[in-house]
Image (cartoon, rainbow, N blue to C red; front, side):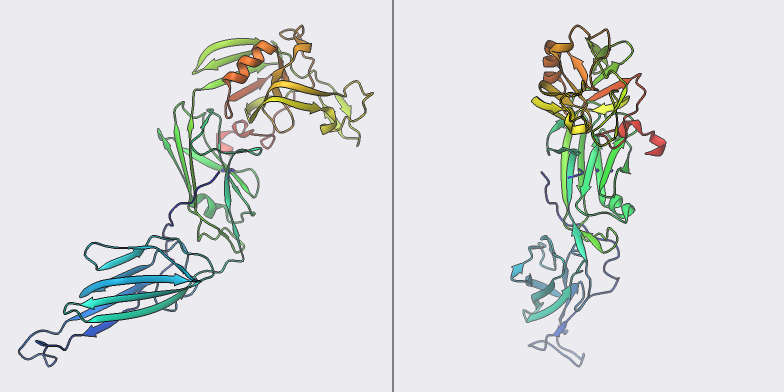
Length: 407
């Protein structure tokens, strides 16, 4: 259910029920030229043109998602102009000249003037003008699509089978049902998915099981004109799309000290590892710190050729503390917000495959780290087993640790 926000604008959609049936404004003109017979006896028949405008004149609180429609009965439209604040709304006239609809996007809190020129069957010109006002929200919320809390989702990009759809709203969402209803997720092949709110601003969407390799995912957030609660409306419409690549799942076992890597379901590589050594200590502010790698399904968030890691980031600040460190680490693939990585660790090669000595990361040899770094991408899965501490939902992308029935 949320990143989530590079985002693209989409065309407006019609908000159901925003304009009441029969709300239109019309004008009729009678032709009394040659051949006309107003009395109805003998001679030609009177002609007229009926111009209807939706939204009707003087309508208040029109949704900017609603299109403007102008129709002519008994004649043809010549020109239709819609303006507000010095800007003109684009539109399209049909081939027979009897109807026009807006194609441009309306804005909030504006007074729009619709000016119509039409002719009846005999060529008599008719002019009509109407105005209406759009909703003026208390505030608006934008959306960004995220790959994870640290990285935007790249439209057109390729991600691993564990990548959720994340819609991140710039304002808190009170009416979550309205927000979910406004966001359409389409997948090829088709698969059922559900939204889950990780916070008041972030909604994540995923299927019950990992995405199938090769799945194409398109997201359209048609939130323009949608009341998200407490007077907050969607600021615009947004869309994105991305692809799922090969299935890459690594399973790291703290008991066996081995990590098996499956590519498209086939065991491709077994890598000796050294994981969190366990135990507890106190941080500089008295907080409890542990050294366990979190069990559960992790998702690769970012990849860094080198990254500086320091115990000071989680509370161990005294250089004399045996657990203190500040190091530049190569070939690091981040798998949690709390600082767990799969990374190269030349200093623990002798321990890898035998015992756990890290502060919580998954240590592997430089050669294996190079292979892992070159092979895995954002959205790929790293599952950790047999440690006493579980990965929370909000520590990166813990989405897959939530049972489907609770999602």
